[in-house]
Amino acid sequence: MAKIKKGDLVVVIAGRDKGKQGRVLEVVKDSDRIIVEGVQRVTKHTKAGQTGRGTRTGGIETVEAPIHVSNVMLVDPETKKGTRVGYRTEEIERDGRTRSVRVRVAKRSGKDI
Image (cartoon, rainbow, N blue to C red; front, top):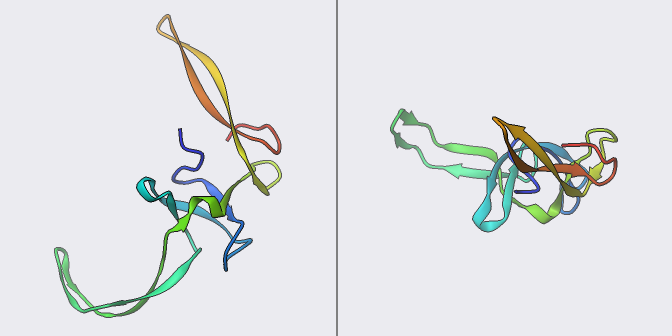
């Protein structure tokens, strides 16, 4: 189970965007990086060309670049500050069978994420 998933609210703890909060748009597992909304914005120069949906105009656009997962912390749902992530196992019974499920827990407040 990943500590940070798509859709989580995170806060940046290192880099030029330190202190900013945003939602995780994408998780790149093979390089341990994530793309956060409104964080690590870079200018990208695009060439005019054709795509499958029609013509694309060239120009300069700003897009979110990936940031390493170690430079962000999950935001605690209770205190709205950065927190570490722990796990708790729960036994769930369904159709007469029990199975254990890992649940993410905020270390700061102890609440489920």
